[in-house]
Image (cartoon, rainbow, N blue to C red; front, side):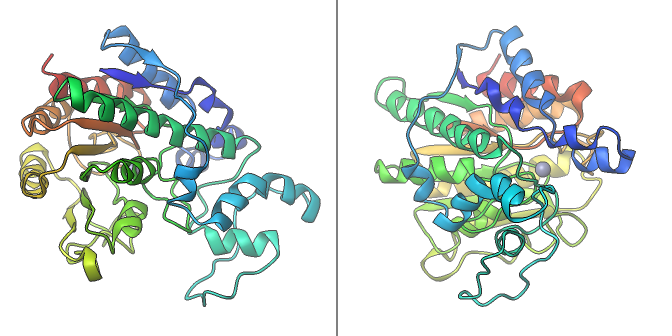
Length: 349
Ligand SMILES: [Zn+2]
């Protein structure tokens, strides 16, 4: 397996802002730079294959998925807060609820509220660069599997992305996510003439991925996650969201209650994989979140480390080429092992 990893992801670390703050806030910014390092070290020590930096596919694949206004804000907000405001942290304090499309304010504060849906995703000095390279990491993994389709039959690659991406939509960011790495990779693969399915197994619903492909039939989106009645992101991820227009029947949500254990989880996974198989994709993109782990501070399921191996095995049983893209997972003491067990299952090790 080939892993792509951008070591300078550590330059984006919202946790640094709150070192002196209350435990509640530390938990709130649990998307810390150590996450990437811990996972990288676990993959390296397990000798699962080469780990290389991503290639540069340029801005165009990002432009294809995200609105220019959102990209421009991510690129400029940090500096604009200094020149147009008092240099305070670039986090919205007002949200554009029920907005009309033409009401886009000029103010940096107004634009933050226009393009962001929560308060968990500050735009720091290096946020744009790190998000950009996260997208390139996903694209590099997609390109490797694309090339391997001709020669290997069932290639597998891993984009060790940080920050995660699945909460970011065309014109909205939030949930620690700025650019939707999986959607950018999926859309790029579609442009190369491939049929793509996305399976999101993060604890939280991938609302951004759903939004991007909701009206499309050329990317199947399946997501297994905590029931949004009780869990973030609350407003998306219900079982009756099937897609719209030409995309109807190409979006499948599997919301599960808090406290879900492995048997019920594997049943939902089996159901989702039936959908994936019926779609007959050329490539399966797996959005891997291990915040489904029993002790995860951002989770509420009761999966154990061994559960991730069985999830990997079930996905391997599809015998599809797989691009794995890292999403959440916040319990640092077990993070590396949980990701590793997933790959042990996927790779049959
Ligand atoms: Zn999550």
